[in-house]
Amino acid sequence: FDYVFWIDIILQLIAFKTMKALGYIMVSFALVLIAIISYSGLFFVLPRICTSGSGFYYFNYTFGPFLIFNIYFNYLLGIFTNPGNPDKVNADPIADMEAGEKVEKVCNRCDRKKPIRTHHCSICGTCVLKMDHHCPWLNNCVGYRNYRYFYLFLFWTAIATGYVGVITTPTVFKPDGFLLGQDGILSDLGGESVQLTRLMFLPFFDAYDYTR
Image 1 (tube, rainbow, N blue to C red):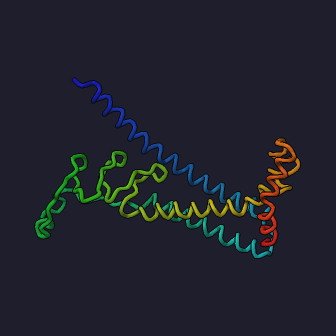
Image 2 (tube, rainbow, N blue to C red):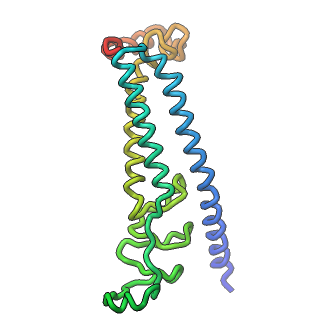
Image 3 (cartoon, rainbow, N blue to C red):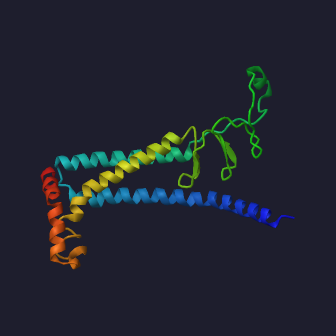
């Protein structure tokens, strides 16, 4: 009797079940986190860095919601779109015979056909067409039918991250801001260090103030 083998099997089953349950928590956390960041950006950050009625103001209140919509839209579609599952073997034997289809590989765990790049997901318990990976943040596999939404979600999230960094950096590092101000976080480093940092960012501040 191989104790190591059966202990390994039991641990794998526990891990797969736990990962599926944990996926619901991770998805909920991601949705709440996106909502908090979006709300904070629209109602707390933008009013502090934008002058009401300016072109910069209208741009941010148009582009910001546009980014939020695309992030939520692609994230939700990535979660709820079936990644694609191959047919079971002999699901329709007459159609298989008429089409002259020859099944090269069959999954011995879910009894489904395995075309090229089809893999079995132990967490979902089925084979997935063109499977990339099982994403716990989607609680779903990334495969043939939903990988476009997954990559678009990453794309728009990256764009939003860069956008937030660009519009908030001048405020963070501004000479009278909460980082470099008289009572700022870096004030304890000494006057020369703070003045040097201010000089490094001075052209950026001037350009930013001009656009506002």
